[in-house]
Length: 64
Image (tube, rainbow, N blue to C red; front, top):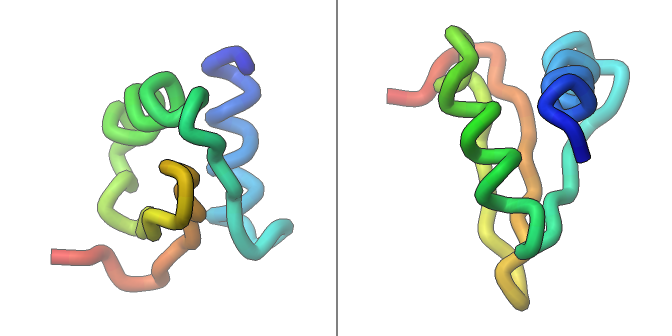
């Protein structure tokens, strides 16, 4: 997955075109790198699941 594709996924999540983004364990590091570089990264919540998978959702209010 390219950085552009990852950013596009997060934009779709932000614009409520999708409800969540599922990230496999193998993709986590590259997705996280793109996410923390975003100005709005505190609006995204990552919830760890089984086997190292993470589900990201978008929050209207940034987390503290």
